[in-house]
Length: 448
Ligand code: GUN
Ligand code: FE
Image (cartoon, rainbow, N blue to C red; front, side, top):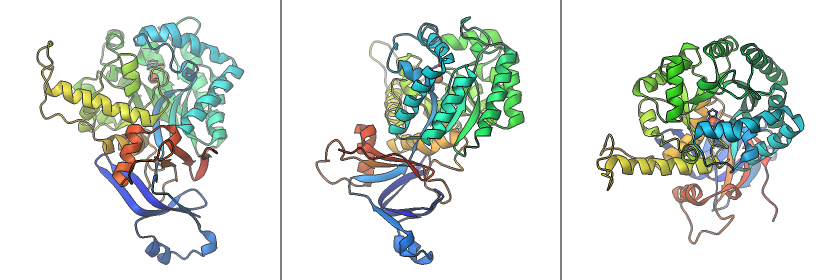
């Protein structure tokens, strides 16, 4: 059993951040958390462990343990164009760069190369749980799943489905899409990995017919599996979807039975009040992807509005619409967007007249709330919070050992809150020195 002693932080809810300054955390051989808190001596005396069983790890004054990051929305194949082609809005971006790229994943050796890199990069940045979109190609999507298993990341993996409004070189028939999805689910279940699970993945309402959405909704229900897609990301897209489905964006998914408590929808930037109420009613979550919303100029997503309506929200990198694979970066960008929104809600913008829907009481996200979104919020959004997201007893040890002194020693000693602030506002993947999934170390400290 491993015992960590030092600063330990996690959240219990959106507004409950908990820290243990001279704390301890005990991890059993099976990777589960069996002790956490301030009072190590009384925990030890109430449990009968022989000293030989205990391996103690002492954290330095610049280190702390936190739950692993959860990336609720990432496109694994798009890592091949990471940081490239970010000069267009969504629909042009898809047609110009993204569909041609994803079509290349019928080549399995190319797929293996890209998928190996993206899982490595995601782990390096501290993501212990990721919900991945792959491509339409079944075989290469299985390669991604095997790669996540091999590297030890917890993951949901989806074979992307699209049967219309797509280029000829990257489209399936309804039958092909539904059949490959069922095969994919059974192949993944055949891997018998406790960490990697399948998720039903209609690309977005625009590229799926009503019939295909319904087939996918039926499969999700029959097999009781997760669902992921995109919703209300971009205004042009929303108009086309409404025109085709003659209902709201959320309504299009709901009619197909795709809004479930195991569903996460990316973006939700332009949702109407009735759609938000529907998501809440169905216990469907939103993956907020601030980097992507900025890069593709989709809009400013008001997560406070979603959260106060009772919708569960996690964060997504949305690589490669998003230009960063790091959820620590997404956390910071979520704070940026929220600060901008507060400004717009409160101020009269010079030259543009009154703010639209002014709301003088609007408050921006606090950093501890954003920390929740990046960890427990994400685990809840992916319906895996019974296993991960924080350090409650019995959960799996999915954790990061952060060291804020890696790049530069702080000029003075930092208290618990300051350690976390320093990491959030100035940190990067180099500060994440070790990463654990289910108790197993998946990132080691760099040797200098
Ligand atoms: N909507 C449909 N496909 C995509 C995609 O690949 N990325 C983003 N950001 N939005 C989408
Ligand atoms: Fe996306």
